[in-house]
Image 1 (cartoon, one colour):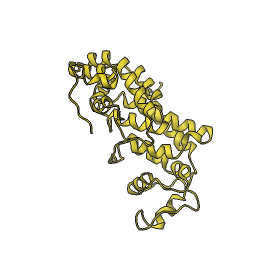
Image 2 (cartoon, helix red, strand yellow; image 1 turned 90 degrees about the vertical axis):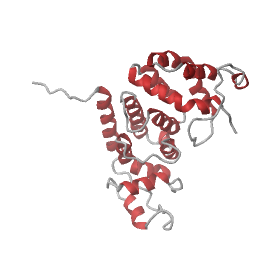
Image 3 (tube, helix red, strand yellow; image 1 turned 45 degrees about the vertical axis):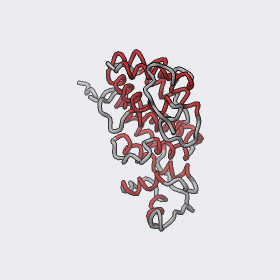
Image 4 (cartoon, one colour; image 1 turned 45 degrees about the horizontal axis):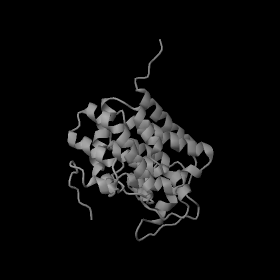
Length: 256
């Protein structure tokens, strides 16, 4: 009798991606000459532990490590902690940073993962894709879908692959995530601002996101039962900035 794995396909893919990441990055360590400020970061013993491969880190040390942006060898440090960090992200064990989960994306981007050896880079990309696809299937994911979208966009430098996955993920759950995301983002987007903290300011990400929402969001928002007010805000997003304020359904947003 064949045993059937009870995990849904999206979860099977995510678990496989986590395993692949762990295998691909096994043995990675911080640079042997890596240092950090004892007064502001922590003792030398903690840095020494990061030079030891595959040793699980205390959650507090893991958090301190990814939150620091001035490591001498950022790619090496990213490879050292990413397998454990990825697991913590999936299970909601990462305390949301002050400026949102996009900050984790900044850490990954600073590690220049897209420039790593091909198999390592591919394992990171597959993890992000599998995690995002799985998140969209979850009615109540550990972190809101729009936060994971921001993380993936900042990590990769583009919203395109994540919008593509969202476009292919249809149904009540992904549509609910879309409605929540639009509600969260519309104020900043209507002012032509990024709706999350960016590592490097790049209006192309915002422009692509706005264009995708204008084209693809309305029918899905209607299917979800979103308000006419929210639908008007998405419609107005398709207008030039100076024309938005004259629209009869302009929500009255003010910007500094």
